Amino acid sequence: MKTIKDLMAEDVDSVFLNPDELADYHNLEGQRILCIVDRNLTTPADAVFEGVFINAVTIYVNKNTMRKPKEGATLRLDGSMHIVRSVSEEGGMFVITAESNEK
Image (cartoon, rainbow, N blue to C red; front, side):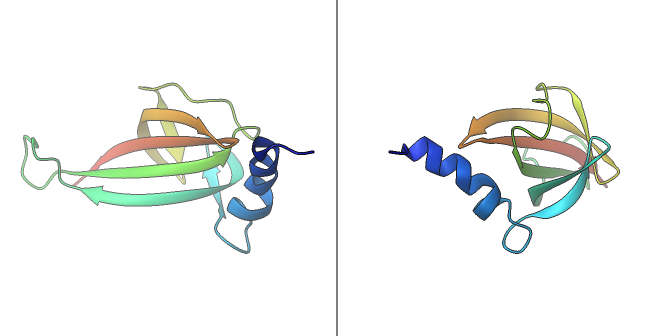
């Protein structure tokens, strides 16, 4: 009998990272990888310079398709450089939160 963890691991590719459903191919660290990218543009409350925004992205990717990035490291996503703020493992996926500055 399969456990809930087994079923969730199967769902990573067949449901969450299905290109016909939720995921798209992105260039992540020089590789074409199927992932979900959630973009969010924010203005931090403690911004020193007016007009500086934080381009925050959350990336959901199968943990078997790449090496786990380190917090504070740079990450290239679709040609843009980001700083990795956090990485967690959830249901067979890496959930990567990264930021870059925008004007």
